[in-house]
Amino acid sequence: MTTVSLRDVNTDLSELVDEAIKGGSVTITRDGKPVATLVPVEQTANTTTEPKTKRSFLEHLMAFPEPDMVLERNPSRGRDVDL
Image (cartoon, rainbow, N blue to C red; front, side, top):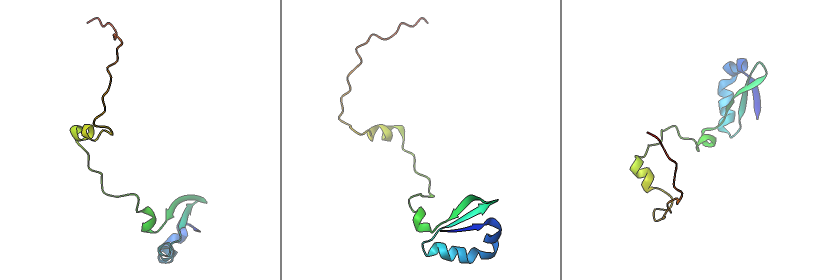
């Protein structure tokens, strides 16, 4: 893993990208503190850039882990409410 300052990235960017392509990673620092990491795309493959499609409420209910599950009603009386 290579560490370079943000100022040096401007002059060495193509070399740093080549290092990332080869499987390495490059930590970029600003004022001595790490602020970013340059890594190959394959390492970030588990995060997608496409938004996930949202299910409708019905689809969400139908995807409940156990569709044949029978829930028992709570036998407690509940509370009194004055309207």
